[in-house]
Amino acid sequence: MPLPSPLCLVGGSPPPFDAGSGATVTGGLVSGAGALYWSLQCTDTDETNTAAAVNATLVLNQTLKTFSFTAPASLGSAVRLTSTVGIAGPGLDANGVSQPSFTSTFKVNVRAANGLAVVTTNEVYDQSTAFGWIAELNAAIRATGGSGVALPTPPGSGTTVLTDTTGVLSWAALGAGAGGQSPIDFVIGTAGTTSSAASIAAASKVWRYYVTVTSAYAGAGAVTLALGQSGNLTLLATAIDLTAFGSTFPATQEFAVRVAWGGSPLPVIATISGSPSTGAGAITVFEGPTQS
Image 1 (cartoon, one colour):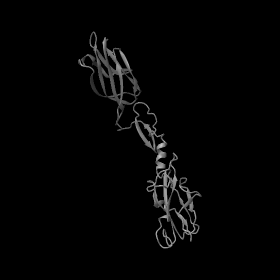
Image 2 (cartoon, one colour):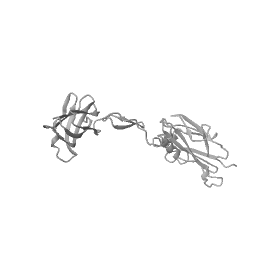
Image 3 (cartoon, helix red, strand yellow):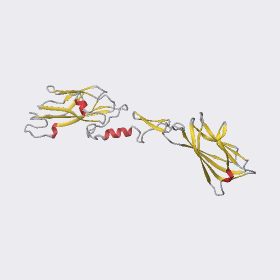
Image 4 (cartoon, rainbow, N blue to C red):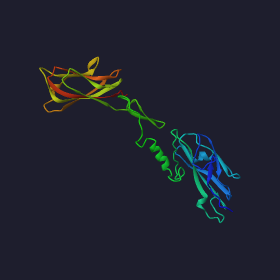
């Protein structure tokens, strides 16, 4: 009597096998010769499925040594089945001795939407007889070009939260309680009006700002700074005395505020009064979306 082999074909080919979502998977022993006993069962799956659910659909034909079962419905699924043959009993030779060669495993994938296979709990060489489960791992790494997860370019100020929906990272607007502040920074000199290059987003609030004097301001009289936006040049500050920053530079003063910016994205405007002959500095404004 020839020694039986536990090896199976799935869909007419050697596994691993790629099945469609919820498809009926069919197969059988490569050869039933010598296999007086044969058992087949799902022994492990990925983390989203269970062996019991797969086994509930598994049907064996002991005469023809064939099987069928229903593949998981979810994309990104995998099941691993264990095939055992025997002579005196499952896994046993004619002398009743257990033979490891009478048992083998194989894998059936329902690939993820990106075409990649996932891993089952206990698989080793089921996806690749040469490289094992690292084939799936490395495929996922190489899918990003080997440079990490590719992210979309972030949009403007106030939309800096990454969200993950169905495995896809994207930028989304900060919602209530999300927190976060975005700085706007620009330099000022002796010119009467200076605008920031960046704008504060609509519906944001200014939480604090810093005024830094890097070179002493001097003029015929008082030199003051107003901060605001077009239409309201003193929204943040009316008259900050730039000559009162001491004699050691750079000198910085912090101002804590809670000012709603309004319904339009606008730059910050710094207005210097007093026609200073010398002086330089910088404005840093911290803003963020309104939180509730």
